[in-house]
Length: 401
Image 1: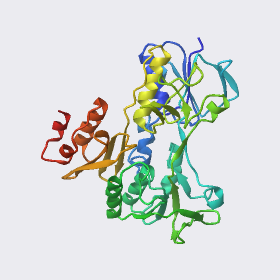
Image 2: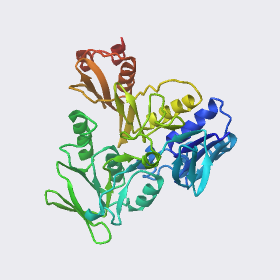
Image 3: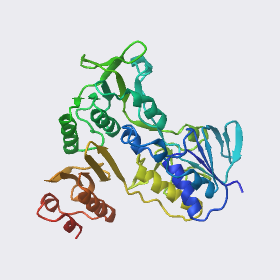
Image 4: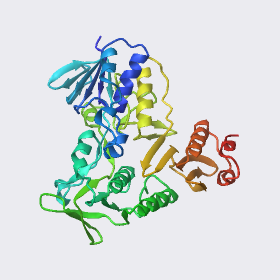
């Protein structure tokens, strides 16, 4: 038996291996990862780990004993150079490894700025993996200045950590507002006001012209001509799915490695899950960059490898921790035409996205009950009346009726 080979040792790869074993698969299972670390959680990297509140071993998804006890082979610090779909083998560290089922859980890579505008200077960082955060952590000393390019969730989480540690922070966002690609103006305004209240300078509607410095970043020049001196720069301008291996093997690529409803690629022996995979969703095709999707999709793929034949039903949810605010998001807001505000009630407030009368998504700030009710409604395909959502005299749980 050739077994299951998993390329990518992140959240999806670890979840897939564990699920295959839990379902009783007794053949060989191998996880191959480029990083030397065992599979670990990424969300704490830009929060607790960056702040020094969490040690590296607390990031591990499973103990080393788990892999030994479940006969899961970890090949860490190794790179897969090619896939041979006809021979059902991969080449890893110069050796050929056969498979019955191959799972691609290769994740995504941060977009980097071109070297021509200073992207390759020392003191310019991205936030994606353990090595990235280990490299930038010494920069976070009180009194220094950081410029963060990109007003998305990763950049804003780093901004919150920097302010907590006593740094001066500038956030540069080319769009008219932060979070414009993923959130309504109401959510953007709430998050921007929170950061400004903590002393972050947010520069919206202006882009980066270049990073200044000869060999190391000393600041930035904006497209409006302003210059901001800085000790270091963090770039958070999105990610791209890691599809190179799949593309070279002739698999279909469509905003990621294209899979069917069951997680199978255009090759019946090759599967994909997590950030790198796109899949059918509500008549279209999407790719979700979230821990929840990585786990759920990988577990669905494991079951389908073993013959379950069950379509993956995505239940999108996301979260972000900034200062003392926990933002929880249920659903996808694509296509919304109305936003209904509920609250504030104390520190809790939520924004509910509708398309016509249909509830699409909820952004809940310090409002776990609003989040849970919204999530349940979306998953059940139910939509409360907008007036009831806005009326805080109606208990939130009554929206479920």
